[in-house]
Length: 101
Image 1 (cartoon, rainbow, N blue to C red):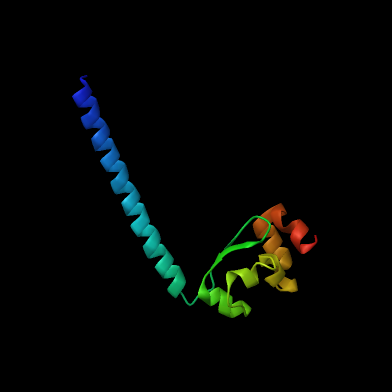
Image 2 (tube, helix red, strand yellow):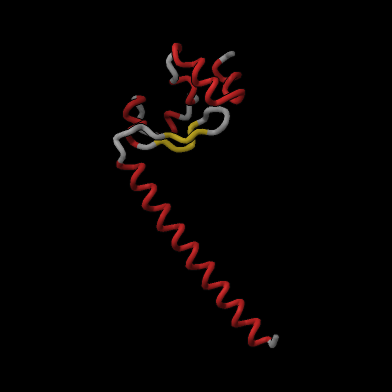
């Protein structure tokens, strides 16, 4: 294989990678738009319950105006006492220390 062939192969590979990244970025933008405009509360939290992302519906439902306000508490602190056992079973040991079981 000549150096020209190697450069051509690298160029094709690079262009394919750029196209793949652009497609993934476009999908991410569409996904975020769906979340932002959903009437359902959607949140993503770390394993210890710290919120990482919440959509506007989630903020409104929980009575907050920003993620920073919500981050003062964990996701698990918003779970009704009657539901905590079921949530613990769903999320496993990661939430036991947070909800005190």
